[in-house]
Length: 462
Image 1 (cartoon, one colour):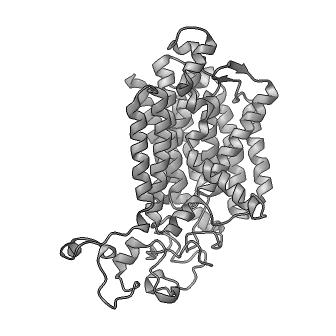
Image 2 (cartoon, helix red, strand yellow; image 1 turned 30 degrees about the vertical axis):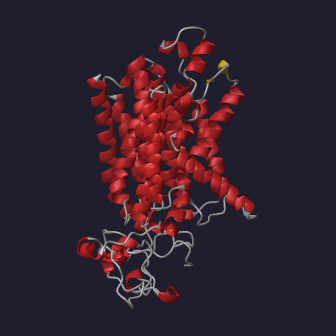
Image 3 (cartoon, helix red, strand yellow; image 1 turned 135 degrees about the vertical axis):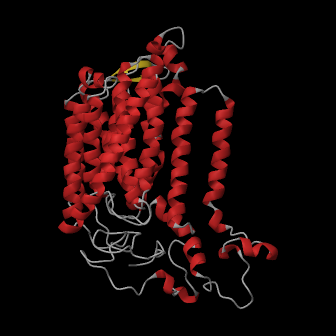
């Protein structure tokens, strides 16, 4: 058991290292070609930031597949299955579409068509859902058209769910990394715990996906030096969907030999085991929920479902009063709770303590979510030991009379005084930054790091 783990760790580390090392040159290339669109009304960042981070992530994907093909315990995946090649073909197509969108802003319907074509390419090469284990019914075989439509739908939904949450620095890559880690634990248990070879490709995909995200995160954490763009968000969304498709409907309930009786009884009794298989979107429940809410919100307001706005979950967190970094951490927390909670429940569904832990952590998450609504005030004797935002204001002191530390820590969008006027810490009077000059977001290769510490309010016009 130890040797496969070392092979997976090696594949993950190589993927992360290649992605990390390629991101710097890719950033210079993005600046050189002008892949730095102007700030849009829905954007949270305030400085033009290069995109095309997906180029580095695709390089990490290719490196991970090459390394895995030369490892003794993993090369069998390439010999016995065509799924890694199917993944690479679909990933190359969706990555190319994303690169064009990052540079030229192609139409949303064209991107949707490209996502369907990429999914169809994977289906043609064998990466598809063959049957579904339905509780109370048993194993239901799917026709070729049913399997194709279900596979394409899952790919499109997952890609757009990941793309929708890519609105804050480090958010999409971190959430997908958490989802990939949970999915890796589940598929690894299926492969080496029960000897089910059909779970081998999905385990490899999850390990490579973790490496892609971990390698890109250091460049993408707040303040981001580069964005992954659609070339990255659609790519990691497709890889995550490919892992779910690879393992869904490939596991025979009788192969696990956990229950006696008919296959129908086994499938019904093993419902918790099939939760991540039948409902792979539980692994990305937060992005999926954001996707559904966005479609309902835009349609209700008479807009196109593809019309961008500032109503996503991460925008709501900023409006509540969370800082940029804290909003990202809160999203991480809920993603990890749902993903690892689903996997844990699938392993020990009869254990009451798992349910109690999930409920307890959910309560903690709600408290953290609502913290800006209830700002505690420290007693007088403890004011010297707490940040300024927790101190009692002296008589006559206005809400905006706080130092830089309080503004940076307590507000993600710059301290505001009466009448909504920004103080100097918001940086609203700074001159605009043009492409290719010093001052581009982050420590650029051609200029120093900008010293913006705050963000505008999520609902402020720009």
